[in-house]
Amino acid sequence: MVSQAMMFFSLLYFSSFLLVMSCNDWFLIWMGLEINMISFIALIFNYSMFNVESCMKYFFVQSLGSALLMVMFYLSLNYLSYVMIFILSYKIGAGPFFFWFPSVCSGISWSSCFLLMTFQKILPLLIISLMVNVLLWILSAVSMIIGAFGSMNQKSLKRLLAYSSIHHIGWMYLVNFYDSCSWMMYLIVYMMMLFSVVILLSSFEIMSLEVLKGVSNKWLFVMSMLSMGGLPPFLGFFLKWWVFLNLMMMSKIILVLMIMMSVLMFYVYLRIVFSLLVKLTMEKSWSKFMISKINFNGVMLIIMGMMIGPFMILI
Image (cartoon, rainbow, N blue to C red; front, side, top):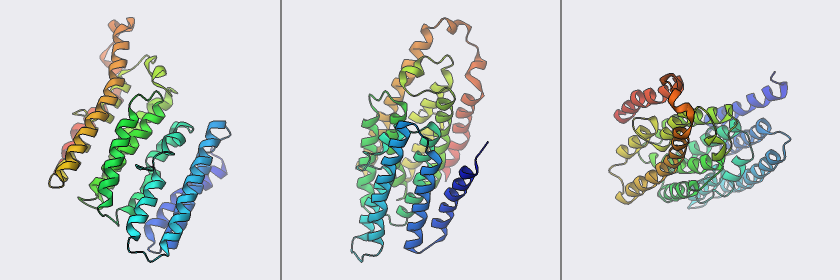
């Protein structure tokens, strides 16, 4: 049963989004960000040692960012937009300010990780989309590189998805150069892909790759990982292909970097899939495997990619 405190902080959490989106005063925007931070911590908090540590880290990081943001709002600087982008990037864990993000993710639950990787990015990204400038090129490139290389050799799935989230921040920054609202579509599709992964990992209580290899029904995980990696015809492929087509006339250097880092991220997920499939072929249950085991959720990942993907490219 949901407690009254949980209902109160949930209402407060979603109210913070409405406050920031409906205000044009910097102080009220700052207040909305603070309400969002406090209510988020209240929603994810429990008394386990790792959770308390992660909540404290998140609080100190966000408090420092909020203090700097408050000062910047009332300073008349020529480069105010650049400084604010740096601060907001720090608050969402984009490169090169990523140091706290994987650490916080590793100490909280899967549902809290999902909120941190998705909903907690909305308000900072909304403000950043109003101040698009050349600095976003640099931060997007750094985020994609850090996300791709940081994902390699990760044993913890929470840390792996945290670095993957940093990588996707780079793509959300880039798509702002096409349209200042396109990042919303990217984030929504990313939320759909991430949800399919998180719901599986949470239901099976999987925290590491070693535990994942021991799961009996691996095909759901295989399909979810392939979608996150960007293999066609899954949704992840069409998402990045849509961004690439819209930015085709931009800098060729950044386009090459996008392709290289996407290939590297695909390699990271492909290694996981390969280890799962090798384990699967070694099991005796392989001969008894039926097509129904692929399951409705896995089939829906393919169907969503084939139906939504072409529509995205036409936009």
